[in-house]
Image (cartoon, rainbow, N blue to C red):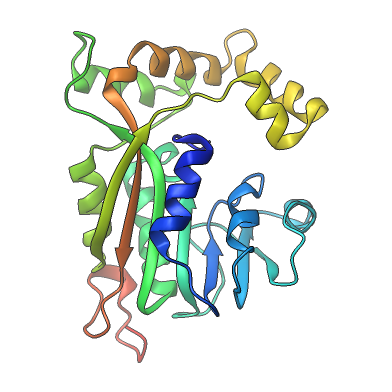
Length: 249
């Protein structure tokens, strides 16, 4: 999910300020839309993290560039070398993970970054105030329930704290309007057959996606898409597990 839609993805790429020779690692490449934008630049490599060989094949087909690489792994254990990336990107991944899992992914992202490397997040952000009378804690509880998809969005302050806890420095934070994916948008991204199948599973019967969509739609005043750009300092050790004490930390 791209909480801010295509505009949010554009804002993410623009905010990262890609330069010639960048080595990008995308922790959740999804349909490859952001990868297509990124590979328009003069990159050294764009690497998507894929859960299995089938996902890797799909990724190569979705982002058919000479610099595209598929890496089997998970967002919190990519299998890539320390300090092997100048940019790490995550879109619509972290707000679907509990706090400990979020921290593990951000720690891995920090490990991958070279000094002066950039981290870009495009995630769902929860505001403390909204149009409805329901409390913020009640909204959190409802979204976290399995029948609602198990969603765990953070406030801006919490997103900032998550990133700075591993020693990265915030460069910019912008918000976009939350866009819930409609039928045409999904079909445009993944094709008619696959798109209709995905929507059927997500919205049919008591599917979690249907419940989550209803909550987000009814509470839109409480949610935005956040695009956060952070940078690894030139010098100094990273805090926490990402700093291994070696030459790259």
